[in-house]
Image (cartoon, rainbow, N blue to C red; front, side, top):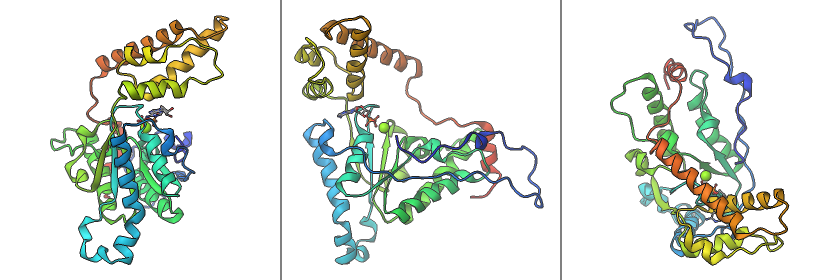
Length: 316
Ligand SMILES: Nc1ncnc2c1ncn2[C@@H]1O[C@H](COP(=O)(O)OP(=O)(O)O)[C@@H](O)[C@H]1O
Ligand SMILES: [Mg+2]
């Protein structure tokens, strides 16, 4: 996604493990640039059950009208603690959460500043909290909506039995984010594949959690239709595909069409036969099953010991 620029390679080199000496100037991390972008999608681009679409519109209207309600009409004073402006989009990968974040920003007529954990994680001492602060500052300065993708990486449940440096560090990073969130006045969007691990303190700060599910048969039919272009010669039976293959995300469906088209061209076929799309779909489903069996549910973002230790050298 269009996210803040990744760190240049130089920034990923191993920092010195020597004790920092006061007189020695600290090596500065090259600046991480957070760049807001124009939203790439609108609500009409996303195939969703009506209930989910209504929820998204509710939240977006809440954000749109909050200036009137809280600022002009003074409810900011009488309802100080009702002003929870975060939303969290959660559900399996490839179901349209990132698309929805863009669509909400578009609906609100604002740019989006998408930030993922990879953007803010730094091996440099104390830089991760700084990067988080910077993301919030840039969003404020540019009037863009902050979108924390893969939010589970930083907002997982507090590790109470801190067995190693990594656990301590993840806790620290999360504490900083929770603190900044307390003061953040603007609407903010989170997305995650793993809501189970979210910290309860974080859950309380979110006004609404919207669940994204794998598409049902009707939505799958619409998705197949949407991702098979009219110009592509084919004899695909969409209704049959939609009813036969469950467990596919919107992203899987889009990928299956692409794979089938390339396979057909490579084989010199003049049209994409049903068998091409069925093969592609079956192979996607098989690899998903494989993956699920191998990894199970990831419970915690693992960062390097070295990174964790370096973060701990400095008070937040
Ligand atoms: N509900 C959907 N409607 C239309 N296209 C979808 C949908 N979900 C996924 N896609 C397709 O899959 C891609 C990845 O979706 P994305 O929003 O990044 O999923 P997530 O953030 O939930 O992992 C999109 O760019 C789009 O091509
Ligand atoms: Mg996403």
